Amino acid sequence: MNILRVIFPPKNILNDDQIVIKKEKGSFFAFSTAFGSLGSEFQCGKLGVIFLLKKSSFFNVSKISKLEVIKFLWNDHFLYTISMPKKIRIMIFDLLWEFISKHPCFYLQFPKNGINERNMQKFINSFF
Image 1 (cartoon, one colour):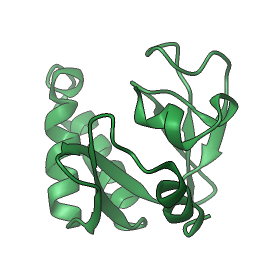
Image 2 (cartoon, helix red, strand yellow):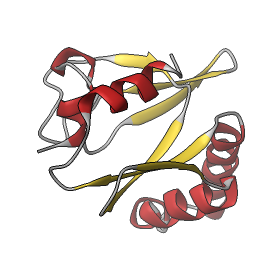
Image 3 (cartoon, rainbow, N blue to C red):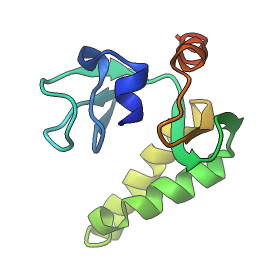
Image 4 (cartoon, rainbow, N blue to C red):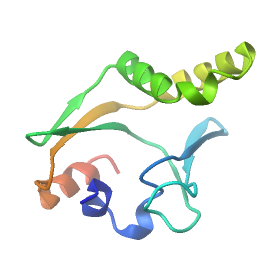
């Protein structure tokens, strides 16, 4: 089961694969894309918290360093950026770092097929 389906109603899921992040008037927004199996319509939302999802044998939420987040996201998107001119890659990196530095970052660890929906919802609601 997809963790997003457990936490959020379908209409609140931007996507379970790829999103586009845009900076607008000093704030960052996430926009849905056509990629992934969830999210059937165009949606967007202001970003507040960054979660890196991690399968585990237990449920846990822990802070993660911004350096770990930038390493993960930069490496995860390496194939998109490697062929771009150096100047563009630097601009993308700077924007990514600004995005990460303005938001709290966490690992969200969860067991496969073992998510406590009530506790998860309480945790998510504490941020919004």
